[in-house]
Length: 440
Image (cartoon, rainbow, N blue to C red; front, top):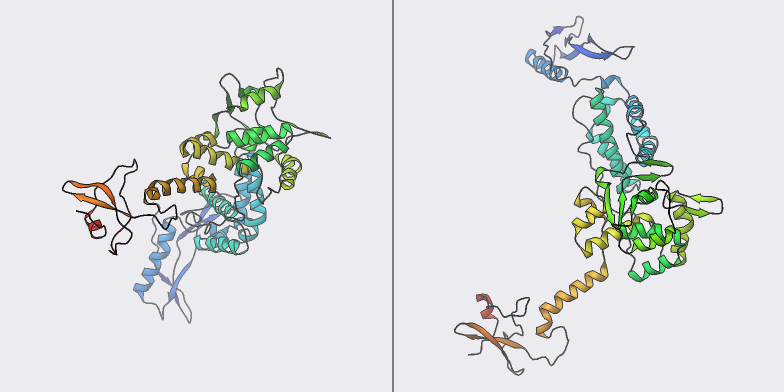
């Protein structure tokens, strides 16, 4: 932080004004930063007191002395975007190929049209919020808006590091809006999953099964080489991914993992049929023109037609659907932590977002609770002749239930027996004594 406090001066002429001439950082023609004096007006002498002029001077100097004025006032945001693409997006090995392609598309389609022509100093948190709100009203999905917000954060974070932006990151507190899914995430039943798998070609079926049972991303499946299949321990070693011609490390460090294959190990051994070069890729889908290792082609020509033929297709149906199924099933069969580890997520919240609502299992769980709580009361049978019972109170508390005749007219008589989960009776609470008829 620097310090300067130039004197307040007055202009000459008919309408004199107070002004100061502090030093301001500017860009030179060669791209370096220099300093020059610049005039700032504080108000007219006629309408502004000397104390008001001093207060206004302090506001200006607070900005200048803290370095927040602004080289960015002299720069169009498009220049920052150019530097961001050159030094961050297009640097080899800096981003995964899929992320690099996504950033390039978002910059071209969404960010440059809205922000590029503007002066950098015009952009603040409220401007970004309004932009995201407009995207929401235009129908852009929550996931895409979240990507745009995260990309804006990244742009300003890098710009701060390069000295092109001074002050707080304006995208930090911008929110993408309320989360609302564009399409419903449908969970296939066990029978539907079985029918779908049986209709697939063997090579495509195995790709789907590795995603469905082992939680791998499709890029991780296509990145598997035979050296990553350990038949002795029954594990798949995930340490790289293949995305549309680009072979690279996994998405995150947590994505490097070992996943058990279960019975899939035997199916893969049968599929292998002999020895293979450890560097050979495990999965390549044969076509009339050769082989296909592009996830889009496999989905379009081998996955979607089968799903539509079986009336199982819905928007969003594809490899990501199978991965969600896998994470959901592992979470149900073991616990969310094991699902997180198998999926290669670094946060539990991410795994929970992937889990789908299993309505059948929910209903089974609810029915078990209802049977345990209401079964002894007879309420589940729907019988009108069910005879109510009451707690029989003795000196040492309730001991047994006594049947109450149905012709008794006590409006407070009930049909409840208080039981623990294991069926044992529990003591009646004081308020319950007013509602339960006690037989002496």
